[in-house]
Length: 263
Image: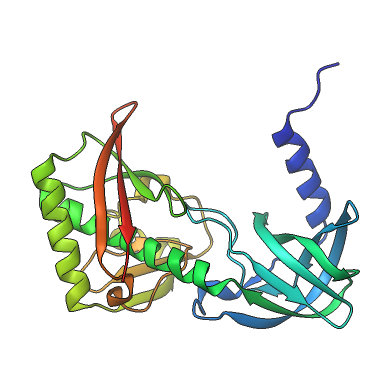
């Protein structure tokens, strides 16, 4: 008999772990600045003696998805302390996995705290990625279509088409940093799919949108609205200087724009 793949085992375990639970309230969608929050542990699934899965009624931990790496941090109560290594989104429920520091994880009240320095770096990178979409389209006078992204290391946004030439890369860099220096608000709103269709048809990730009951829109002042479930800074000034911009040609007619954000 063939052994099941790792992916199948993991998916099956997540089905079991989240079975019968209500959807997690995703605090990070509307309160991205929250570094700490109180919550209720509704289920604990031990894994080995030093690790456990915790499921909460609400969470500030953004799970891995949409190019954004999982938040990390810690949880603690009177009974235990846990170092959160990753959060996983499965069928509307966020599953938090971590290493037990002290005690035995149990249901009930818990205090949550993000590794804020890491989260804030990801927020700055995510907003910079949206800004790059706009600046690339403005520089090349063409609509851009994203293929993927990754906001940890190496940090990049993937696009369909031929890589921009060195002159265009310099232009994108100049336009982006000029906008960052001037500053611009980042607005979050929620729309029904029918309400947002006309607004979003030029979004760089339009072709990759899943079917959702509600669409979260992120708009940088002066830029195109983009559907996105990630975390962002409130003003693009917070990105800092955009640097180390370079294009990498990839298979099947795609390329990546690598970048860094700094002070």
